[in-house]
Length: 455
Image 1 (cartoon, rainbow, N blue to C red):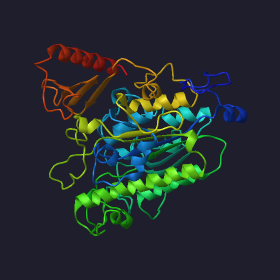
Image 2 (image 1 turned 120 degrees about the horizontal axis):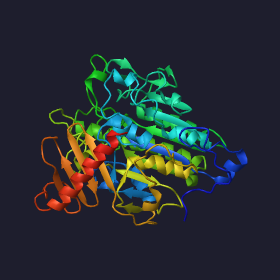
Image 3 (image 1 turned 90 degrees about the vertical axis):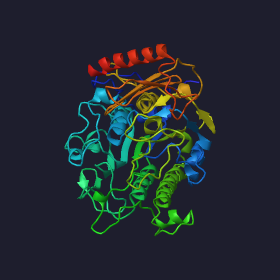
């Protein structure tokens, strides 16, 4: 089975510097049946926070059902363990070192350039192929003039610029942060529901064009006192109906109970979006990709350590597995086997080339992309050689190749080596036991560092 959709026109690539296809006629668009694309991200959701990943308490029936209808990924990585960088690498398909953005944007930086304007984002590849494009939710990669979503390939945007917002008041660091296109808007409602509703409306709109919807929720990002109104408590926020699913009092002060309600509210909102696909008759021709932008944060002594990355070690902003291995589900009816589980090693950098290929486009010849089309691996069509993923954030460095993982927590400390097949929780350092593997991975990392430094 081929996963590059048939193309009945001559591809012209001279109009842009990154080799995009020319627009095609309406008849040709209809004939190709290119899929709609729904790309959903959660914010800091843990590897062990869903029922389909082994959580016995969390109520996530929608995502559990999505896994039953698609492929659940066990070895899916995000290219960075922090929000800004994970989103920038998703949208560009490039390592953070190549795009020059490898830190979390501060409150002020969120309204600056952020991701440099010379980078090409997913919607900029898809629009010339005839896609209508929309982003609903968290942006977090720069919001200065020229950097905003509708200036970078999205036809529509409804969401916020910063790293997280109060779920009901929509403030970040003392500033109201909710936008429609380039205009600040004041809308009442729970942010998770607002973004889901916007996606539903976009799906319901009749159009002959396929759509690309990027739906980056801010849930279940932990609350922050700086986002709250005077006198407002710093606690997880969810609608009453989410608490009721557990039999909890909506006024509970138990952070574990409140966090569960936030995750369940997210699950319910995603369910409404998926139901809209069904109601619009678009389910069978829509690929749905869902994953968490990075692992749950295990921040000590803050009263917020209520998420779960089990059985992985640690969490966000680290390069232990809990920071970079994340839950991920892909549903593509008639193309991916329902209810399957894939242990293929994949990474968020793969999403861009997968989507461009599905859309019938060509990947750019003059720009380095660090991912590859995921579909052959997900259908077991190919048996590729083990891939190598590289990571560097703050003082951490890491390499994943096959069953082995290399981790260094500070530049002046030695690398540690772990066998993830036997030791998923990264408890036993095998560096002295397997010096040849250690050396080979160290050499690969050093070579990669030199290559990405050249951009």
